[in-house]
Amino acid sequence: MIPQQRCHQFKCCLIELLMETIKCCQITLQTADDEVVSRFSIMQQAYKTGIKGFVKRKSSTSLLIEAECTEDKLAAFIDWCRQGSEYIKTKKMEVVDSDIKNYTSFDII
Image (cartoon, rainbow, N blue to C red):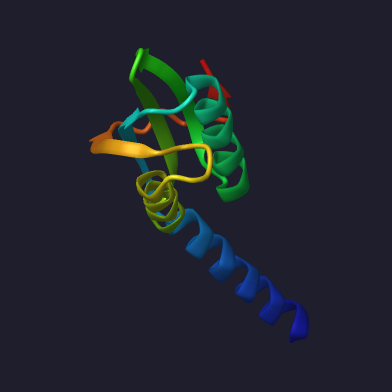
């Protein structure tokens, strides 16, 4: 009886895990800071929160981030980007939903 209960619990946990909603969005940040330090800081935060995707320089004054993860972690990452950090001073930010691409890592491009 006990092994069947454990099996049932495992199946329920697995189903809950598979049902977590994955989202992808593009974040455009305009900053006044050193772009290299900003991109590295974003990559570090993505690693900490389990975000997959990339960050790249869009122009001399802005960065493009494509971020993919569960909704709750993605929301926390977006909030972090909005607030900035000691290395990132966000002047303007735009977030647009995007198609899921199944990223396996987070990279600086």
